Image 1 (tube, helix red, strand yellow):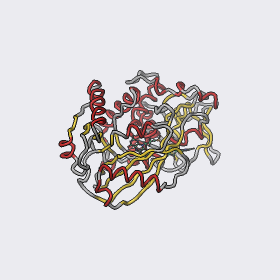
Image 2 (cartoon, protein in one colour):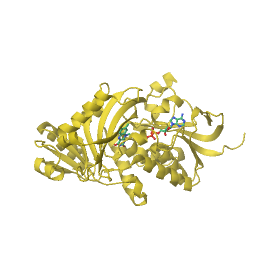
Image 3 (cartoon, rainbow, N blue to C red):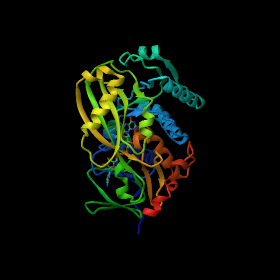
Image 4 (tube, rainbow, N blue to C red):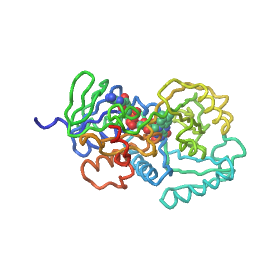
Length: 375
Ligand SMILES: Cc1cc2nc3c(=O)[nH]c(=O)nc-3n(C[C@H](O)[C@H](O)[C@H](O)COP(=O)(O)OP(=O)(O)OC[C@H]3O[C@@H](n4cnc5c(N)ncnc54)[C@H](O)[C@@H]3O)c2cc1C
């Protein structure tokens, strides 16, 4: 058998697959990307595009911080339609108990070199006059940003293409492994490595991995320029993102460059992609509790998307356990837009035997022993 045509075939042209393709191509590898649909049409089209440093765990912090810095470095190259804005995040504290959490969070960030500012009630109101009265304050993280994910994915794919990457869209992969990707139309692509970057659909190609669909709703409003200036997230968001069993909502709003407001967020497990009107009502009710005027705004569109959730809330980045030719880049839950660039770096580091910027062990698929048992 001759030498395979590709060093890497990436399955999935969402933001994670796109970032991986760009990084592998940048390192001189022969890359192909296949997607059953279009570029960035999965969770990437449904996501909010908040580039955010998070401190749920040290490993989550390391990955989000590294990736946030990579986005900031990439900023001068990003085309206008990626709409990257460094608007900062304000974590909103409703009461004194949440202000204690503001202090803890600030301490954690300061020790790790992340700029922050504690806001008292007055300063919060000054920065975001449309928040309701009576909130206790918040924490401003000025280096966080927002972007428009589908255009960011397209930019990364185009970057990879300029470096020789081949792209095949409308091409569902039905089987991967043993150095081959088999497409629905029967075509087989030989490759030294295959990256499963199929997001919430990744277990269909690598059975047994612990990735579940976690549905989220978003609403986009008409144009209300200046109504919101930062990405605003209630500190209770952490409780919502943490809860692994129950359905939850949290106040989470984002200013878009167009003057529109993106309103989230909800979490529930399940496969049904229809809008759940009860969940939507709960989510909008929560938003109004923080910003009463949201109740009188007109909404343009509502949609849902599926986060790829893992039991320990960390992505799977590295070799799969069942097949030496398959690497995983999936399980990014609600942070895949943020962490796509760092995922690509540490995956390419593993493949090329380079030393990664951050410890890679917390993200290795081998940490999830059960994978083998199901395979
Ligand atoms: C409501 C919501 C809000 C979010 N907000 C944020 C946020 O503010 N910040 C943030 O960082 N993250 C956010 N996320 C998470 C983020 O959107 C995802 O983590 C990220 O988009 C995952 O990218 P991906 O490339 O892994 O998956 P996807 O974008 O789903 O891409 C997977 C691709 O694989 C393709 N595919 C699947 N199966 C096959 C197959 N068999 N053959 C070929 N192709 C296949 C699909 O067509 C798709 O294009 C949010 C998610 C949701 C749902």
